[in-house]
Length: 437
Image 1: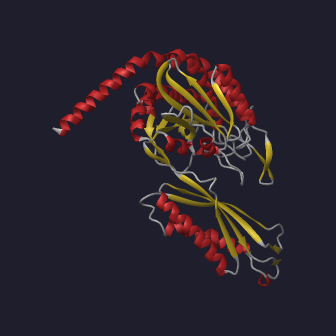
Image 2: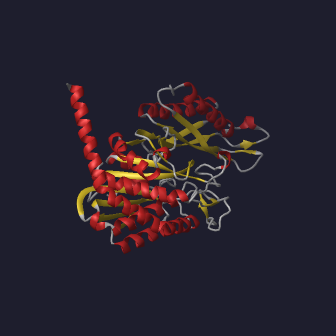
Image 3: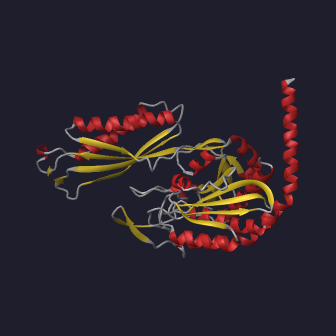
């Protein structure tokens, strides 16, 4: 009897979803027509932002471009949220839920190596060193897509069954030491208040899929992330007489090697994956002088909080123990500002919105993607309200071995993927307003 009732309820649910989707079909067609009409301008926005990248909490030009565009469209616009963030609201002509859409705006301290007429030539100081600035993760595409969606929703305002809340976020890629920002600070400053969203949607372009393909995953999606900084203190001496001091470079090297045994030998990675990486090792300024101290910085990626807490503890104990054993000292700091929780897609909402992606790209071009160790602080928005985060393929049409990954100085996108991302985020928004409740 119970199985029969479940079958009946499932059939009724499917019927209601089908009926709602049929009723929304004219709006889907209108979204697609508008997307095609705005495609060239969307690509122009992406190229402009590509050529003028800005690091986290410094997206002043990008934020100004976005704010002017949204104000002209009639959105209620709030600026300078978490330094440079934008929150904009458009109430549709028909009652319905509030759906938040997020786009991150920041670039990376990477010197571009792609030969494009709109390549970035921007340079800046990063941690005391001159570096190039590049949108090496494709955030220009996210901004351009959401600017285009904003205009289309504004044109269709009278028929829109709900409210759209746009969140243009700074500093997703991390913060300069001592700063606050990103999704965490946007929430602190009321990005999800008045009105509070019923759901939040987001996308990310990637070179791991060809243009025209979309990827999703229900439940755990991206890893959580932490940043650690280790100062290894020794005692300065001449390089020709190391016995007169304590060499922090040697101790730091031993610490790097010791940290690798935590994940490989001390945690059960069959239950949940984890990655521990040291990405910065700074120390010394002459070949014949052993310095007083060196500095290490790295990242921990994890998808389980219990495992994360264990690794945090062991990193500190390992670094302190190795340094002390060699006559030095290690000071380990974990950055609360840089802590990001794992990204978990709402399972029920994902199931209801996968058909939206399939309608846009075709069933053969939509696939479930594996859990990844990259992080995205969209996870903080998805903790507040049900979230759906999906991937948009933008890989150039060349052999996979010649396609640079995100964060590479040679990262580039096939712009044909942008309209797929635009249509997908709009279809998913409309469906969440109607069939995705």
